[in-house]
Length: 266
Image (cartoon, rainbow, N blue to C red; front, side, top):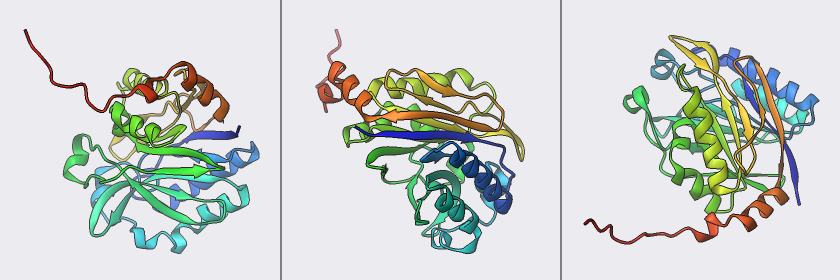
């Protein structure tokens, strides 16, 4: 049995001001560390800001992840002894991606996942990711996802079938999306008997407004912690024993069929 204290963090992001957004991320990391959080998830495109001008300008590159621009976040993760998952627009092999950067408690920094489902204006600005990804934090396997990915049941299911006990979603929802946001992530939790950690961008960023709603859902799809539009953290515990007990009672993952056969019409 493993218990892992996690937090979904949210704050406003400044369009195109990476240094300011890194500083905000550091503030949230320090706050999480004071509450013994071991994993902090931050919103989609948080480091660059979610804004067209930011997306079309110069982006951080995968090759630059070890450069000084991320040193404050690395230092905060090391001092706080926690893992940080944060969204950013990123250049990878000459292509623009919406990605998640992972900073470990030893300072190691990677970008293991690029968004696989692009929505709206993103389709003309970015290239889709070509693989899923999971990370392990204190031995707990957790699938990675970015916003629109969470609208596709098979995305979370693929992580769960591959061993994930939780699903980490960096998101940026626009006004009017409250009902769908709350429904999608609760559904991904109960469908797969897994925890879901949703970190939503909030406030004004460039030309857009965002609605926050960061939350942690248990394997029954119930919110264990949730915040509104304010800056802050939604903190809860992942308990691997709860996942095991749920999946023993509700065997959807084990009963999954790779094919339902042909569809007949009459």
